[in-house]
Image 1: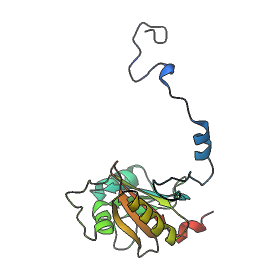
Image 2: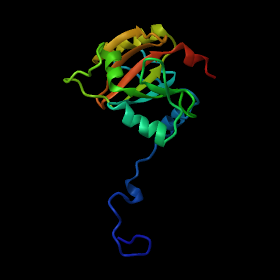
Image 3: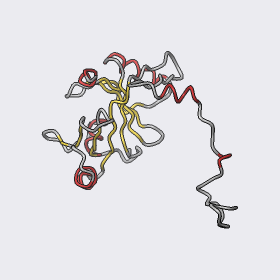
Image 4: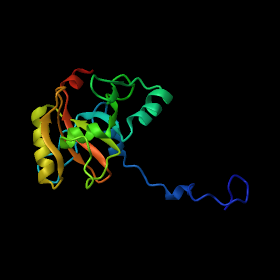
Length: 187
């Protein structure tokens, strides 16, 4: 009831300390291990050995509006390759790869056409988890399918050398299991 010596009620978004949940210290320690995420255990088979988060990209229904925020306003060093509107960088501290992925290009990558299917949730972002090699991508895709996940596509090699399999999560994220040889040479 008393908030900083006044008689104002405590706002609902500022709950008393007894509402805090204790932290699982072993989980916190495993998450703080350098360049390593804890293995995620699929419902079938051995755990997937995720080495690191390979990249994160926002999905942009309107790439020019997104460019206005991420490049013009925030000043991120994002560039697109020839023939693409996919803005990206490997030069942002703390991220191996950050991108602004046009929805049309995400649709092309996932479905082979530039329009996202009307009966599939439109994604907000994409996150890719890196594994040791291309064979591990294929194995992970098979395990995820066996565990009941519907893949957007099975493991395949992209023109830039990355091997990736993707699914759409319940949260509306494109989740990729990938192997990009260039990321494994980063120290």
